[in-house]
Image 1: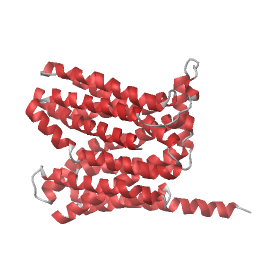
Image 2 (image 1 turned 180 degrees about the horizontal axis):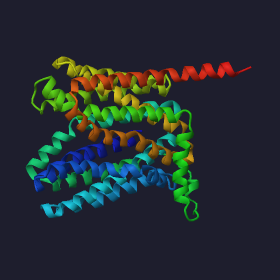
Image 3 (image 1 turned 30 degrees about the vertical axis):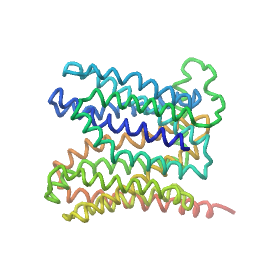
Image 4 (image 1 turned 120 degrees about the vertical axis):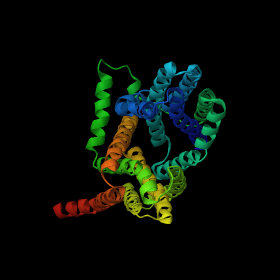
Length: 395
């Protein structure tokens, strides 16, 4: 796990830096806010093909795949040194799409490898550590990336990211894990890839454990997208602060996320994944509603609580997928779950932007809170109803 978490930290630093700088880079070359915003879409777009891309993680051994994916991106990123004028911005977008596709396969392979190499009783803790590692990096990577870009431009940031991929590949190569040759590695008939992808989707949809758990995660991320779109309205209209104050709220949220990662594992040893997801959604929803109040202290406290609640939902969903997915389909199911979880967030960011212009955030956020608390209550109560129904139907 030390090698694995080292790889997560190193690659997470580079990815966060590249994510931040790509928009600034496009804006500085073209002057276009729209094109700058499209950099995030370029990174997100391949997630729509998550089920298809995740099938690759079930066809080969996962550890060598992680190493190969990281080395491939390390080889591609230096191409961005040629992005020195507006007419070459297309190359940056092409690399970002490849980046997103690589990330979709990488995440699926990671989750499948963990499900095979870590005992089920430890999965919650490992996912919590992974979340803590990733969120900790986000506290420092943006500042480092912004400073490097301001001093030297985008090229050195791309080279830094390439170097982190090489280091991550070395870390993943150092992992000691025994993998059997996947059944899917056997040559398949024509059309087998499509059938395997569909099977991963079907297995997730048919699981009585995973279907409601992933649905809760998707609904949470939908609400999170609306909440994220409303943050500048909260800062301006509610708190009377300049837009830069949003950075303070995000920093506090990041600190809460670090705490969430540390506590998720111990909690998952005591409660089922669905209850942790319900608790996380309830915390997030209540805190989002409190953001409607025009007080700095309340806004800061709400950001910290949001930072705890959101990761709890994601760690619970991730752990549930790793526990329940059959080994031969773990990559496909993980990739499908990631698509279901994160695409609603991207959609809601656009939807939220439209809502915030039409509805006062001080009215929108309490409605969001009520919806989230209601879903959390249903999620928490569902297992009890299922047990009650089973008992009633028994002789």
